[in-house]
Length: 214
Image (cartoon, rainbow, N blue to C red; front, side):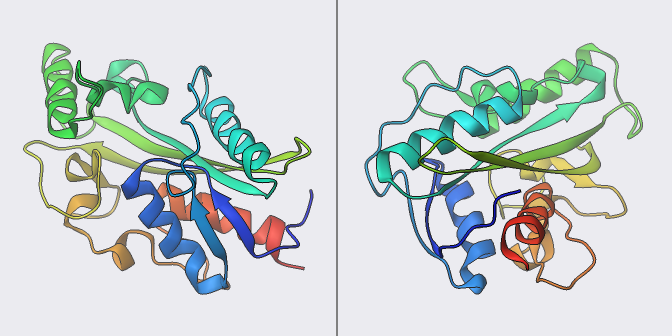
């Protein structure tokens, strides 16, 4: 495993919600970071078939464009009753014809698909959020960190916090959705603590333990 020996990195994302969450996670560790969106980097086509492949595409593009290490996240909602969909196509389900993204529409698509499968109970609507972080260097070296959180899809959506599908995902052991949680509740984690809640925070914890800690 390669250690990260700089606190200056690029957050390889054009997703405002994702950029905000990563900034909240890396901020306390003293990182100086700008996003690919701020740097006006072209958004690469995510042609991978796995979260790891798509995370690598984004991180390597920003690392090579900037000459700095770049941290990307590829994440999605994996629902058992839908054979793993939307999965790596989670963002695609929100795409409109004009190229914009509408996650209310995406959540409605998920609910319609579950209803068509007859998935009505929490057990039948089980799934998980998956996040894969990729740390890439300009020389092409990559490290991957995966985090998952189990839960179930609920309807109707609840809460206005977070972003994406957060209002319909209720993590296991909780009676509220990610959309009803504050940032601190959802992914508050600091080095030395045993675990984090959200998929992204769990992946981030592994990144810290592997690449930052001695």
